Image (cartoon, rainbow over all chains, first blue to last red):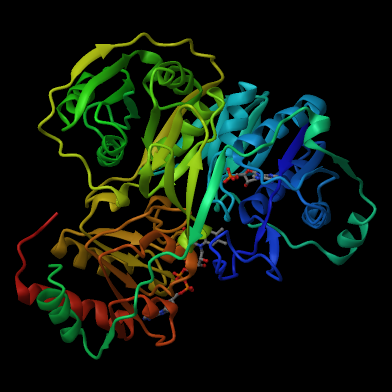
Length: 249
Length: 318
Ligand SMILES: Cc1cc2nc3c(=O)[nH]c(=O)nc-3n(C[C@H](O)[C@H](O)[C@H](O)COP(=O)(O)OP(=O)(O)OC[C@H]3O[C@@H](n4cnc5c(N)ncnc54)[C@H](O)[C@@H]3O)c2cc1C
Ligand SMILES: Nc1ncnc2c1ncn2[C@@H]1O[C@H](COP(=O)(O)O)[C@@H](O)[C@H]1O
């Protein structure tokens, strides 16, 4: 079974981002970038399926500028078999990413697509569900557990009230939640091996997709900042302030 | 043109977040319709019809909607949405699961998690875990939107007199089967609608220790939440998680106990009216946003806090 893993290059989760002074976006120059954390979990899950002899090949796909190839290399060093880079400098929004992925699915015929539930830059949480809709495939979103058997996949989903379990026909789309697994670090020998693995390049035009954004960003601003308050010395003082000053109880 | 809200409900009652989405919808257009899909869920449709501002309830009652599966609900909503200027849903796991699939079927770029409506095409939404706010303008004919509940006061549950119009179910593609769920027993208010939340982090050390928070919560009629670290360590179930990738909350009071205040946690609670924090590390980032900070060992401070509350003899809220 072939598994496709879409991975996005994003600002590292530990970086405190800054809004540009001209309000056109977020400062990305000289900022540490990394694979979207949810996508690392997706890569890890695919590798575990491979190790369990359920998956036979793992293809990592990333879309965007040239630097995406670094992110694909990271996936290859973790254990993915080969990469596909959809090269474009157009700002990609989830619908466009989903359409591009649909075109790649048509070429690659994976039985399973495992991807992140959310990119931590745009915080959209859309692409997997959109891809499932475009393909007419079932979707197991926000997964914290997977089990494959008899041509179907059981997905445990994290929902607001607790956990939900669904049984999906294959092919299917799964989106990962944080507790699905703990991604591995690439070992040095695997980083060396990854250098020899293949990354194929393609473009939206070759895939027959118009990636033009539908949403225009008019401006990006700082959120309203909270000013720090006071330190209280005792529990009594805390209760007094909350009760008599803030009047929250 | 009217706007349609996709309701989340449990068969009998609307989920609170649905009324926040209705409130946002009412800002877009004076004519608000609500889609209630489920099985044997007339009570929920009636509840929706009573919400202030709701003109029509589109009621799809069919066994195939017994569970909120995106595979069956998306074609239904996409079919109905074609007659509307906008389709909205709460940005809960229900809305987040179903709505992007609907958007794809409509060939629309969804606008996730809006916190403000500028005009019929223009919305404000947080990006980068709320560390930046983007104002975006949509070029799509139908706007498909999820609504961050904390940003819109809920529409009143009474005062409406909408009519209920049955709609036919659409075909079940038969791709996915609901197997079961494990829902947390709710002994306290829901996190997303609680007035007061008391959350514990890694500093709690284990699940048993959450009892000291529960005792405080019960005196205040509060909900109990947690950081991801506390959930990951298995102290509490996943649905307790507050943050960028958990629940977004904005209660009157958020009390963070043994939580450092990572950006991803702040993303979920920094819009709370009042924030208080108890942490033994005076450098903990949580203190930079807390209105009231107490540097103390939580195992001493929380029981004391509890005892002080007992002295106040508060009327139980909730
Ligand atoms: C993609 C991504 C998404 C994430 N999403 C979320 C999310 O939605 N929500 C979330 O919360 N996190 C999220 N995180 C994790 C986040 O980065 C932090 O790791 C997490 O919030 C830390 O939890 P914590 O504050 O409980 O633990 P820690 O950072 O370990 O802090 C524990 C605190 O407890 C204090 N403490 C310890 N013992 C005591 C004591 N006896 N008395 C008083 N204080 C004590 C310590 O001083 C410390 O400040 C996410 C991370 C990533 C990468
Ligand atoms: N440019 C991209 N390249 C590859 N995968 C992407 C890209 N954008 C989004 N994705 C995938 O879609 C998931 C959800 O993203 P989003 O819907 O933007 O929150 C991510 O976790 C990735 O798996």
